[in-house]
Amino acid sequence: MRRAISLSQRGYPAPNPHVGCVLVRDGKLVGEGWHEYAGGPHAERVALAKAGKDAKGATAYVTLEPCNHFGRTPPCSEGLIEAGVTRVVIAVRDPNPVAAGGIERLADAGMEVTEGIETENAKQLNSMWLTAIERKRPFVVGKAAASLDGRIALPSGESQWITCPEARRVGHRLRALCGAVLVGRRTVEMDNPQLTARIPGVVNQPVRIVLDPSSKLSGKERVFDDSAETLHITGNIVLPELMATLFERKIRGLLVEGGAATLSRFIESALVDQLELFYGAKLLGDGPSWIGSLNISSLPDAPLVEIIRQSKVGSDLWVTARFKEKL
Image (tube, rainbow, N blue to C red; front, top):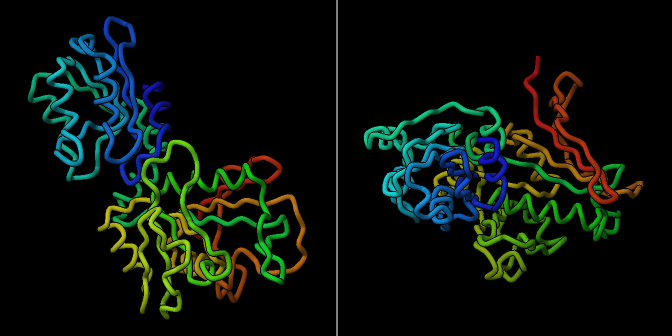
């Protein structure tokens, strides 16, 4: 199962969950796979194809309950049954009612089913998707790239590039992992970003979302090109309602890249689940900050965060944090 969990980290399957599968027969690994991208074969189907006839009589170790419905691909539960797999070991039950039921289907077919193996590790590596399904809104990652003193640009507006190439590649990977990226109108006007994930292995580009309440953008900006889908949100924008709408569109992860006012609105609305902050090895001394006003009147009102990881990426500092409940 640990091997299956490790495999599940590969690929960019958003908005689908990360899943890994390992097939073992007579103590020998005969097939393995992971879900590479949405619309592609699921982990179980990849592992079964690699195993071929050796799948008959094998045990399948799967990080998430095999799906039991026809979506873009056939049910994995049926694939395991048809291949003659005799036992399935599952780390986590599927909380999505649309795809659930695989365990019952496998048991009805006479297969031995074991669940709850390495559950916490499997949940942790699939926390974005699992949290989104539980809360019925996308898992929101707030991302900012700033100088060591927290500036995202010079007073003139010059901002390319504050962080190093390695940090920018991680940013592209976050776009692909989330499956959707959001910015405000001001960011489009200042930076004219394309907001795609320009790294190897990405099959499905993230959905691009632009908040433009006053409809000031022309539609000719790079973010509206044909390299990916773009949602242009205008008019009165109520963030919780927007999150519900995005969830209905099957968006499970959302990377909020800015600017400062947009990210602050999400934080004020308690909609940011995780922060990914990249600090370049530069001091700008002046210029806009990566975050705007949070309307805090006293220190006890300040949002509390827990730093869960800090590391170097290239020449820069990469900090991951999550918000804590106030005492």
